[in-house]
Length: 136
Image (tube, rainbow, N blue to C red; front, side, top):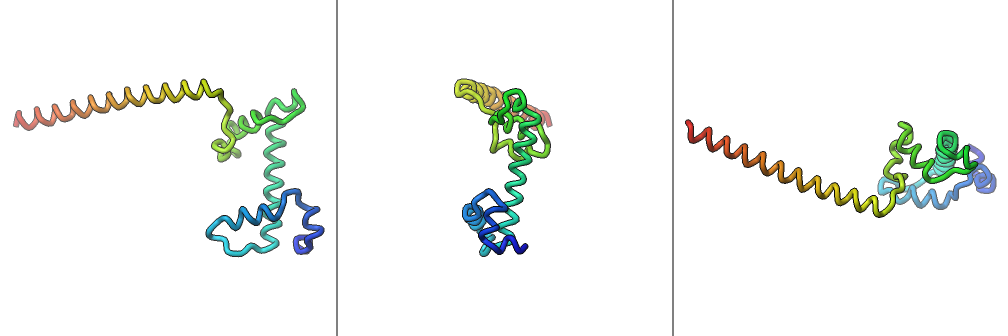
């Protein structure tokens, strides 16, 4: 890649800042040095991925109606499209804080009910084991 070796033309071929990408790549403990070609290709691949994600989200979301791409479109794509499901934790659906607090409360109540059920099952198992040993 002759273009990647020339820093002037390199910046014209990719939109993302190569210095930032280098910092992100070096943050990995397995990476000791970064080849200029690898840096350029990583930047270009990232750029193309982001472009594809945005285009797909726009086409399959409400972007066409509003003529805009929204966070909701991106999060919906991450959740619904199998290709992008690995982004579901990074692009979660937005919910109101009040709904989140209600969900936490419900989970807490469900957890308490399950713990009570588990304890009751354990007591029944112990009673059966004691009954079996006494009957023998």
